[in-house]
Image (cartoon, rainbow, N blue to C red; front, side, top):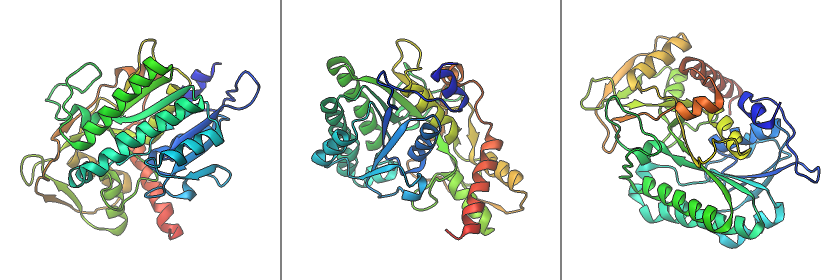
Length: 340
């Protein structure tokens, strides 16, 4: 069995360097939602993991206490360079970002300072520190924009980066390609659809699954904002479970993408409207919470669905929505019971 096979299965594998030491992986944003799941799976496969995080939204309890944490902001080039030099990782998983689309409109300069200049600081630190491979968490939903009915957003298809966030992420992709071509950095970009699962925050501009789970546990109505008008079934999204996203990250870190491929769409290829999402969660929860209608929200993309062909070829079966929602709701119930 190869390490790539094991990454597909999500089992344990001890991937080591030629010197016999464990491969070192640095995860930026590793205390956050997706980054902590990457850390969890990497640890299970025997990698030595450290995280770099400014704790703006991440939580230390999201990773085991033995994991080394560098508390740093990507915009501080000197500190980022020092952290990379100190840990000396062979691999980097780059998840730290300004990830709010509305936030990118409110302050596009801040968005660019984190997602463009911060990424450049990390790439320079990686170049100077001899990092071999870097996987970049990008966005398919924002970069592909409005996807017409019957179509899917996919690598090689139309790009519609009509938000500051999308522009900054696409810029990061281009810089990554520069470092791949000119500095020999082995690089891969993962374009995410709507990721959901355990540890997603319900505060601020949370994902709709987190918001719905929180409402179910409070016994509050699930609010479905319209796509075109109040009372319709809402916007269509491609919901991909965070465990599958973490598996894709590990496979990319192992160099398991198809030859000649540096960008991977990470989605299910299935569109789900907001009302269907709410109905599915209520069925899973066994509760009779009401569903209420709200007006369309300014700036919302009506339909976003990504191609799943390449991801299926790499990972095999993906987590069904109902299964992922059940796991997610169970986690929120545990958190509620623990009073945290």
